[in-house]
Image 1 (cartoon, rainbow, N blue to C red):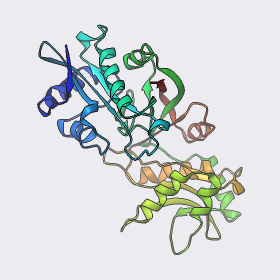
Image 2: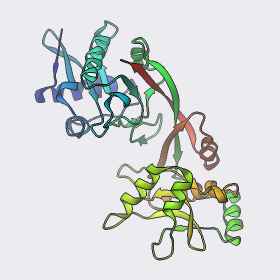
Image 3: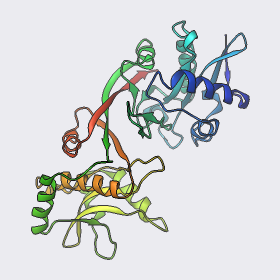
Image 4: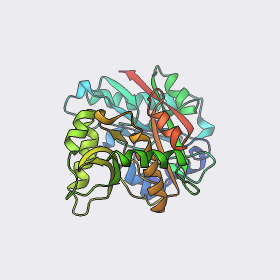
Length: 325
């Protein structure tokens, strides 16, 4: 058995192993050689020392990848990440996965990391498929519960640090419920309007995001507005002041309606603005040609009630895992 750095001529065999033995036995989506290379080797955080192929008598039997976020300045205070690890099925349960995992952990130790996390902050987002649907989500937020990967990590002293749930909505026949339409009209009569952001008419993004204590939404919005042709954004406004936001509105190439998040200013919460704004986003996404929407959130996040209200259903649960090195 040998663990060595990935070589370019490993690529076709590794993609074949992934597509024939990982896909179909897990939630993960298939790769092409190009998409595998783009996901891992072309990632700006890629390090060849953390990209490891495992062989047995010259046969490639698996691959593992670990990364750090190179923008993290405080190395000891921020995690290292295991981005992926897979072993051929006929070589599983023989200790090879654990040996490869320890090599990846050793790489992270050499980078100054004190702990590992497996969660959505990972520099690599692995696309996963919605069970029994022709749909996907762009990044697995953790390790699927009760999967072979989950047991591999748990048997190597990783601890469960939380649960994230994935949700799905089929948009093909989506219509806004009458209760939502009635609530929109009620709020409209009080001056609260759901509309597309117009810089000539609306202001207040900074105040909204500061009040919600959400700098990541502010960054998403500012990055969009800095583009030569910003994508449209759906908002709630009253007298020109932005009081609600649900991100950029567009349809991804695979038919997914994009979703950044949804937030309403604390001063006007309790009027159903968040629910109606989100339902309107679903409706507009369908009008824009989206076939479905997906998202994930913490299992104890109150926002899950909003997603159920809009008609989403829970389709998969993921574990956030951690290990101190």
